[in-house]
Image (cartoon, rainbow, N blue to C red; front, side, top):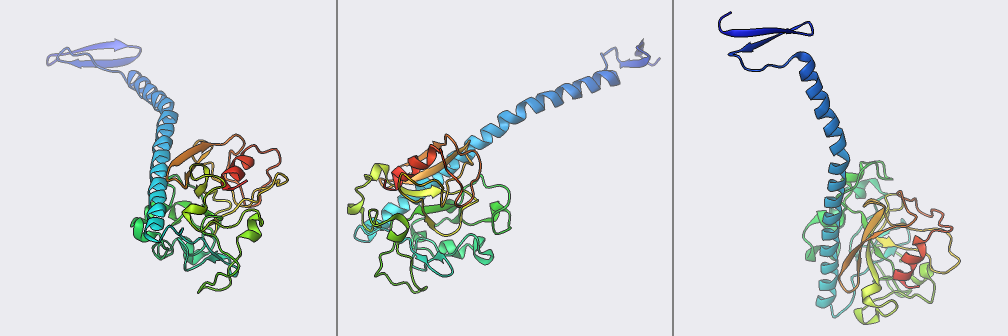
Length: 280
């Protein structure tokens, strides 16, 4: 038979050209099935590795923002970048570190809201303002990964005083959000409670509460809900930066999903942790 050997196995004819071993259809299907099983086993590991890589990238972004924030103060006589809110229509003021609001359709994906901010000259990269792990839909109804920003700044840092005036309109006085015991911090020298190493600057925010540039959590032991909430994107954790320039990834004890604004926090061990780094 032209130098070919053949054998009959299980009803299938296996032809072995030149005497070399061959595979039956069943054997090929078994191999394919094994490869599929191995791939299924590897997928969770690959997803976990991807998540870790994105967490590292988010920390790197946060570090660049933290460095830009410190550099801005160094170049402006130790004054902090402004973090002002226009009362109507509740958007970041033109004088702030970013402008716009992530719940407004024409601003949520508009990179000009980043580039027009006072920190951009120290960053020069729009991608630094957004977490690489964004998935799903944003509140404004666009894919989350098209947003230009996912981070917000602690409202006490660079917040507005009653006498402040913006070109965008009336400003919301920061003390009305945090209380008179927690006034806005306007200079590095005023960062004392908490100390710079423990004082929150930037927070990677939940998609459910992300709006303006201003991250606010009501202070007080009787508070039972979030106002803005941190994200849980990174293994039930969030990246954040502090006033001394360092960054951290915190893993939450109770937050397991993207919380909405004003989400209940009764018995939530994470709310007091965030209150503490804001000022309480």
